Each structure stands twice: as C-alpha cells, then as structure tokens.
Image (cartoon, rainbow, N blue to C red; front, side, top):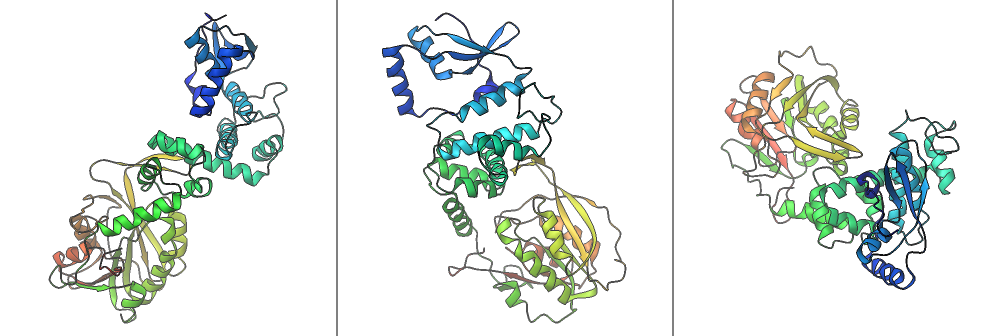
Length: 423
C-alpha cells in the first residue's frame, strides 16, 4: 500500500522524539534491504487516517516507494490519541534519559490540564478513570515515584519553553549533551532563557556554566559607578550591609531601591527588610521595585521586619516583556512597586494613584537602570524637599539623580568587583 495517504497531525508530531542522524541512516538501510516489516499505527478520524506511530518509516516509504501495512486504533478524541503516543514512546529502547523524562512530564501535564475529559473504558490513565492523585497514577504505570513525576513535569515545561526560544538548543538538551539540564533548566529565570539558549545552541555543555558566563559578561559590559557622577551624590562602593552600617537608626526618610529579582538573590530581601526597619524614621517608607515571579517570597521576607502598606503597578513603557517560566507564558505589562513602613509608623501621609505610568528602562550607565523621570514622580509623592533618600542597590545612581532633581539628599551603595565594575 505504498500509495496510501496518511495524515500527519502537528500536535502528535510535536510530542515524538526525533531520531539521531545515525539512527535514521541505519533505519533507511534496514528498510531498503528488508522492507517495512512492522505495520504503521493509525487512528481513523472521520475519513482521515492519522499517523500515530511510524513517522520515519512512512517518510522512507514515500521516498523509496515502499509498501507498508497499517493497524487502526480507536480513540474518542485527539487528547487520548496523544496520550497513547506518549506511552508508546517510552517503549523505545534508544531514548535518552532526558527524552524519557520529557515524555513522562508531558504525559502528566496533559492529564492535569484536561481534567474535564471523560475516561475511556479501560484507559487506566484517563484523568477521571480512578480515584487518587494523577501523579500517583502516572508513577505507578511508568514505574517511578510521584516526586520523579513532578520533576519530570517541571522539566518538560522548561524544555518546551527552551524549544520555543531555540529549537537547536532543545535538540542538544534532549540528546543528553547538556549534563545538568534536568536539574538546572527549570530554575532559569525568564530574562536569562534566551541567552542561556543561545549558549547551549553554540555548544555549552552545562546550564550552570552558561548562567555564570552570562552574569560575568553583564558585569563586564556595565559601566562602573563612580562616586560623584552626579554632583551631591554619596554612592559608597561595597555591600550595603557593610558600607551603610554607619547610618544612624531612624534617620532615613525614603528607601527607594530596585534589588535584583532572580532567585539567587532572594536572601538579600530579608537583609533589606532588617536594614529598613533599623534606619527608617517612624514616618519613613520603603519603596521597592520587584518582579512578579518570586513576589510571595519577597513580601514574606520584608514583612518579617516591616508593616505592609500597599503595592503600586508600574506600567511598562514601550514594548511589553514576554515571561516564560515554570509553565507560565505571560505578556508582562507591569511591575510591582512594594510600599512598606516601620511597624510603629503612623498612617502614611500620602495620596497616590496605584497605577503608575512608567518611564521605561535607561541603560546609559547600567544594564538595569530605571527611569529617572519615573523615580522623580515617585519620590515627590512620598517625600518632601531635603528628605534623605537611600538606595542599597544604587547601580549607576539613577535614583540618586532623581533625588537631586526632587530637591532631596541621597546616599547609595553598590558592590564593585575587583576590576571596579558594578554588579
């Protein structure tokens, strides 16, 4: 039946693991000598025959005019057909450990994302087929534990995000060439993913090494903070926990700061909260930019030391950012500005609109420099002329420039590496 036309369904094709070049060559040699011995598996959907198993053999049959036979299977809908394809993939002996993990993760994610689908008779893995957690059902069938299933689901999500950014990088990951991909890829922050993908595609063999090199390059391309870049600024070189330790208790009116958002820097938020609780006046306020991904942890750490007051949404100016992380695919249009006060503070003496039109990022002196105009408006809302503004993560001092424009005093801190570059 060399002339039989089968339909290639894109949803099904996407969950199939590709053959390596050497495997494809061996398969072609085999079918040219022995023909296509094993039948292709198809699903009859209306008048169409949807190919489920045997895509490479079907391709070779078309290329060389070879005969083949088919076996039909019945499914209620495409979801159950894809589930069968995923289970069938694990029967392949030549899957890498990464590919097996992706298949298990995809299967679990498909079941969790389709809880409304009715169970097919005899389908033990249909979402509503039996009681118990989906992960436990998947774990039992595939001979792993539930924790392995959860980790596989995270890795499958991270792999698909990587694939959407760089198919070449994804192919290297699934082939097993990136040694720490299973553990490290799910931890990559959205802003780093394109850069990590580029390095993997170029031959990087460890995700962690790619991240470290990217961070080093960012530090090297960031112009250093120089004390006195703007007249009247006091920017101290070093860790704020050390170089701002001499600030008297209850001496600061406003802390306006933009700490790093990535997971590795989360402990700094706890230290920031303790520092603010010590140095803020009873009428003082902490205003902290934050990302959304780790916002619950950030708020929990700050409120160990301070009283939660409110949160503003700063609308991004210009193009929106695209966040891909932990199964999330989000067009990001705003950024939180967290507002906290000392525990014994009186009611905050400010009236403000909690939707703020942002001024966009500036990169004149620092990779993550925030808009000076935006900061001026924020400072004027929460402080008076001659107020003391402190920024423990001063970067290039853009908030200091804003403080001066608002008629306020400023002290900042920024860590410099041994070459004098801002981190």
